[in-house]
Amino acid sequence: MPEETPQPKRSPWMVVSVLLGVLLVASMYWNFAITAQVVGRLGAGGAVVVPAAGSPVPPAAGGDGAPLGGSVAVSADDDPALGPANAKVTVIEFSDFQCPFCKRFFDQTLGQIKSDYVETGKIRFAYRDFPLDSIHPNARPAAMAAECANEQGKFWEFHDKIFQNQQSMSTESYKQWAAELGLDAGQFNSCVDSNKYAQEVEKDFQDGVAAGVSGTPTVFVNGQKIVGAQPFEAFQAAIEQALAA
Image 1 (spheres, rainbow, N blue to C red):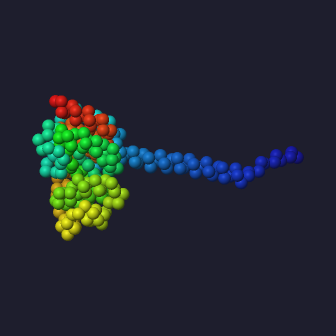
Image 2 (cartoon, rainbow, N blue to C red; image 1 turned 30 degrees about the horizontal axis):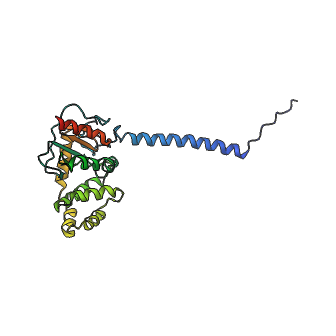
Image 3 (tube, helix red, strand yellow; image 1 turned 90 degrees about the vertical axis):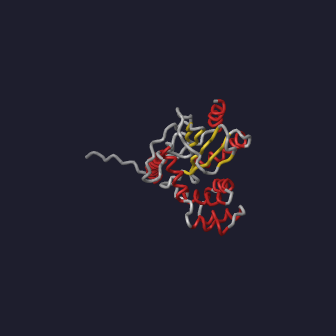
């Protein structure tokens, strides 16, 4: 009768190694799935491109940040603006206060645009709202609160407060920041609580849709569209071209 071949014993460490390998593969798949979902929300040029639910926003274009061919008819309306009203070049930003790429534009680019072009009187820079409600629930309330600050002449100070404290956005924070900025608390709080500027914010959004805005931030330089939180040089080139035209 042939002898049985002894089976190698599986050490506990071998079993643990196999289990760790399985978990590693599962983790990689999960991370890939999550990454795919996130990338689906972000434009190649550093712009959030998910529209508000039910809004007829066309697909994003010009994600590389280069100005798109042709000029778009877009107005600064009566929205907050810096620089001379008769400037040869008007720069209009459609933005979302909760958008991470809008914060990047604020942190890395806006200051230099202001120092090089606004403060020297070469351009007029206007801010318009484009809240992406489906993924940024705090964007529209923040936009309305900023309009309430604008009512008391402190839009830009409040605008800066929001972007500097983007992780703390809430009605309570807006009221606290307004007090820190020296606004009339009663007037501001009543304005915020009543959603006084809901129609104004919605008008900005619809004007953005009409102009072809599909992500934030989107900036128009005399009607030339630049999509995303591009480096300062991209805006510089477009502005200089517009100034020389």
